[in-house]
Length: 174
Image 1 (cartoon, helix red, strand yellow):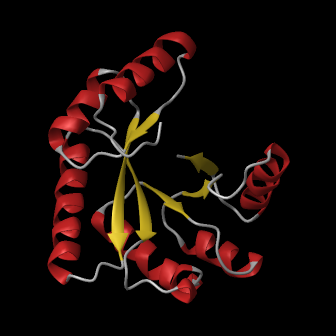
Image 2 (cartoon, one colour):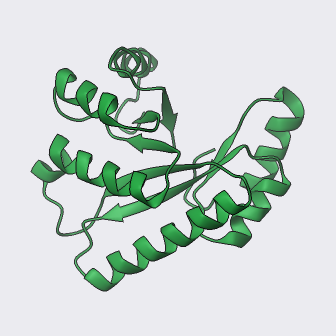
């Protein structure tokens, strides 16, 4: 359950109902605080999701995001909760070339792992060989963000198939 506000009542209710109805593992977020993490634990989430934002013009904002994510990961781990971390290149300083760069993705993923991410959510960029190498390099499972530009079901299935063939452990929508 991947939304902008993982601590909202609708997300908490959705996680609770998914666990009660289907008994499946659920990763939920986005969260950035201990309170939000605790709320998701209380409704049965199996892991939480956070976002680490790169490309900010103001370094103070980037530093704040790093500190917040690092502290939230530490708290989640203290509570026994694994963390999926999505590294994103948002912001006015991000160029289209950087957003499509395997090298930039590799650096963002390395920072995420160093902060303690247990699972990564990443865009499918570069050639198949380049992306497969990034996945092989990662010491934690990599999932691929999917669906943002795939309005038709067949293209979603093809994206999932391609991601799996390149070594990704799953595709995440939201």
